[in-house]
Length: 420
Image (spheres, rainbow, N blue to C red):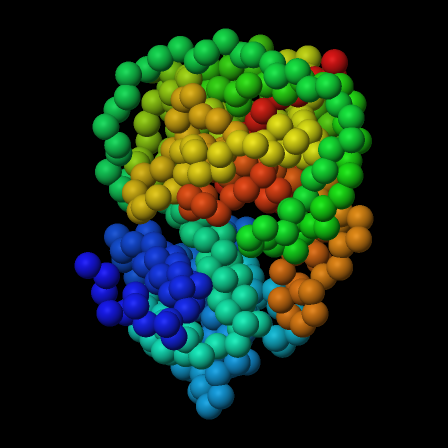
């Protein structure tokens, strides 16, 4: 029997869907942080990472500022001081706390930040049925923004707990799977030609995913899977981190300056290689995708393997018809890790050889939200595909993630390409 609500002709199904999505996104963030103590949520392990408490508060500030403050008459900010504490990089919103000092924010406490979230959630939920279309679009943007922070939250926590000599496990490990050999590496031949890339305008996309445009591809081939831990161990054993001929000049300088000898979180002991994750330190699965490698490492491995990294246009053309929700992606709180046998989406973000630059005809949006992506189009490289920490439904073929070439605390991996 249909409910009386479903028979109400005044109800807006799109509004109901947005409200449900808002609640689900906000709940998952709380679930991810549920096991944390106040100390766990306060410490900042490096300038690139943020404390869990800051992620909880910043995503809340986003909704409070760009939706409630700007579109709900009479709304009074929960605490005016939070605008300084929890703004990230929006110059149009004024002064803000220094990024590398976010770990100094011992107060408000974790429980007080949770109270802030509850207040904003209640206010936005009450206002949602009457919000104008422009404000609803900002709610949708805010949900996608928070999903990005969910992934950052997970990877920031791994980095934080890795600094603890006890290497504690935040979540219990999943049941161990039998170790199996990876399938032999195969190649998907691509003929080249003119392809259309960029978001097609259907559904949500970030501004940097468009405009849609033509790209010329030369004949090439792309690997049918990502590089595995076992293959990476062979690279290490062959002196990959000791041989400068495989490395870009900046990459080799980074290897020497930082003493890099293996992917982040790897350690070699009497029993072989181990890695650290939210489930503690575990043996490296040789069949699983290698992860926590930088662009410099990805490029060096590709050179060693007699291949190269795909361009983002090559990657997107291959992924155009793939199921974006099919893969090892984040569904709920718990230990996350790449698994053997994945596809184009999930497990690890895949480095491309493409610089993160604007597409032809790109224009940043007006106002503070125009600072979201465009101003970072300098010195970074594009990654594609999503990871085991990317919320399911968040990624798509046109999605452009981006990081600096030395960064590797995200779930970043490698898919090879080669010229025909």
